[in-house]
Length: 297
Image 1 (cartoon, rainbow, N blue to C red):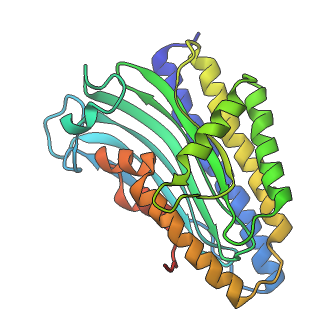
Image 2: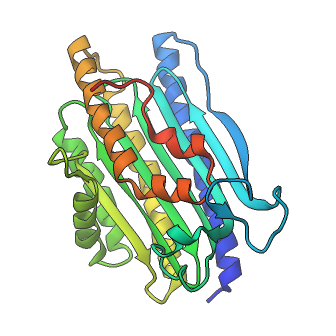
């Protein structure tokens, strides 16, 4: 088994590499769409950010200066024609949890120091016929170490059964490559997690969700999280291509914008990643990149 520190660096390198890969896939689709529709093409804008001791509710590990480094990341945002807003973010941060937050994090009550790295993406297509998608994978280290993440598909108009089946099949095969018990467990977890209790409705058609994964073989746990990211990078472009040139109506667009409101409600009220990012002094614009650009209630 490789050393713990080496695994952390390998994980961070993988998340960064996956970010680049997905950016390339999405830009390829955007360019194809713009070329066929004779529209101007714009790729991702990228912004590096750093986390310091002045960031809210977080203190960098064992450092005194207000400008002490606590890691950072790369925010990549596409505001295009096919993808009205697509955010694909990478982060690698470290420091100390604030006392009021540490008690909720495994292993942090004993020692507030942490290290975390991951990739997070949310893609909001302009067409109401192309589903929104979310995915993240992450590695977190306190006095304990674990992987977490997941992916879910959210049609903004009526769900297409073939899309739902293929999305779930891809992640079932992904899970089965590592542990046959994963898919039913993580699918149920997603169904429970991606649910709006105050609306009594699901956010979309589900997917998988997992957290606190440490089987005792961190290499294997990392391999699974890598496979989750690679699976999303393959299946989502296939689904986009099915619908990207389909025509849609103003009525379908109005329905999409209303459904986006549900997405906002979930991310601001229940999403763990949003809470973790804000409570650890992450980059606010990156954390809130999951919010759609246009929405109605």
